Each structure stands twice: as C-alpha cells, then as structure tokens.
Length: 352
Image 1 (tube, rainbow, N blue to C red):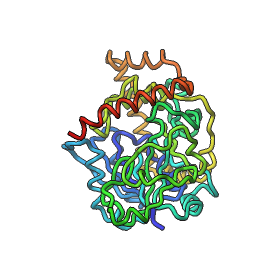
Image 2 (spheres, rainbow, N blue to C red):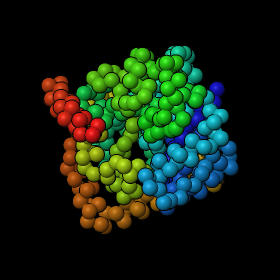
Image 3 (cartoon, rainbow, N blue to C red):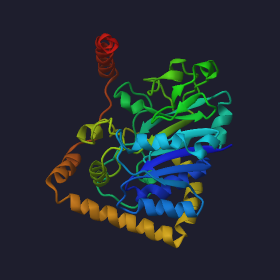
C-alpha cells in the first residue's frame, strides 16, 4: 500500500529531518516535496535526501499567481508519484500525523476504518507554552500543551487535512481536501472523522471544518505546531504565507492558535521509531552539516530581525500576550450564531 505525503517548504531545513523521520515511522512510503526561494539550505538538504532515496524533491520557482503552495499542488497533480499512490495527504512542516489506534501506523488506522475512502485529520492546536527562544530541540517534545479536545470557537481550530483514497473520485488536490469530485463516484464515498464517526454527505463535496464541539481525536489527530517559540514565530512572519489567498501572520493569528490548557503527550509513542530514523539521517555527514548550518542560519536571521523595529515590536508583543483562554460555552455559541447570521445575510448577494 503506497501512501504519499506532499509538502511545500521555504527556509525550514532545521525542522525537516524531524518531520520526515516521524512520518516515515508512521507509515508514509513516498514523499513529494516542493521548495521555493530557500536561503537556509532547505533545497540543498532536500537534494541530498533525494540522493539517499528518502523523497522526491522538485524546485518550485515563481512567479505564482496564487502563491507557491497552489503552484506546487498543480504540479503534484501531474506527478507520477501521485498517480501511483493508493492514499494521499497534503500537509505542512508544522503538522504531524498522530495516530492513536493500534500500533500508531497508517495500516492500523485503515484497519480501524476499513470502509473509509477519506479520513479528515482534524487539527489539534499546540500552543507556545511560554517558550521564548528558538532551540534545536524536536518540536514534538518541546511543545506538549494543546487546545481542549472540544471547542466551538474559533472555528479555525477545527480545520482538517484530508487523507484520502486515490481512486479517481477527485481530479485535483487541495490544501485541506481533494477537489473537483466526480459526480458518478460520490455515492461510493465513505468519509469518517478522527473518532471513527461516519460523516454526512456534505463532506464529500465541500467543507474543510470538522464537527464543531465534538472530540474528533479518538483514533487520529493532526498535531499542529503553528506557533513554535516566539523567536520562530517572528521568523515565520518574515517568511510570509505560502498561500497568498490568506492573510498575513500577525498577533491575531497568534491569539487564535495559542491554546495550552491541556497536556498532550500522545505523540510520544512514535518517538522511539522516529528518533532511530532521525539518527540514521544524521549519521550522513552531509545531512548533519546541512542541519547544523540551517540551525545557525535561523539564529543569525532572528538576530538580524531583532534590529528591525517592526519585528522587534512584534516580539515584544508576543512576550506581553498571555496564552489564549478558551471561550465559555455561552460565549462560543454567541460567536457561532453571529457567524451563522452573517452567512445568511451574505448568501443572497453571493448568488446574484
């Protein structure tokens, strides 16, 4: 069973080996990685990993009318690895598939949901937990405090990425879900959430948010380390968004993701296998040197950004801002109702 994981990266070499080792340990067999405008050696590291047979690397030079991420997805749609894959997932470098069922592998997840043609992997937001300085420490070990298992708002906390069977039911890849469904194949679709619940047919054609207010993490979750250390977040703002259809990184992005009310060490079950694979990669002298150079680049770039007023001010605001407090059920319902009313008012205008 071939499982393909697609990734786009820019200046992420310091995190690449951890991410790759973890997902090989989970059971992904193929990796298709696109890089663009790298200053920290990410593209060179990917070339070396390709030489070692760990992945396929394609450079993704601009210009990109819709951003580098969409350009990469269009190229991935045409790639032989996509055609050969039985299952496909598009994920980012700060997202880690965390399977709870069985031995924690993709095979165990598929065995638990044998009818599934798609499994939306719901984000579990992991907050900053007060970490100020970037350090070369595995992300999954450093950030262990997360959002509650159930929240109604902000709705972005329940976005998902879709692991789907590559059987021709959808003709195009998307950031959160496969696109362009084949109407003739939709009756055969069986979508199940991360807790094993059969999802309504609406999910087959649209929807990128899981069932609000329900725990969708029983079998699998997608650990989302969107923030990292405060210094790393400033560097993330400097890098910019991969998808130009979305807004810039700023303090509002931070506040909507900085939840740390629950301790969650569940991904640690994968650590021994992932650590062994990471050690195997670091045994390669060229990869080890590239990783060390990437870590130095991050420290140097962060130091340079601290000399610029806008970035220095953002860094100060991050230190001033406490962790986000989940809304009470009443306040969350108020926000969702306001959103529903706004959608009802906007709907007639959208159809004209």
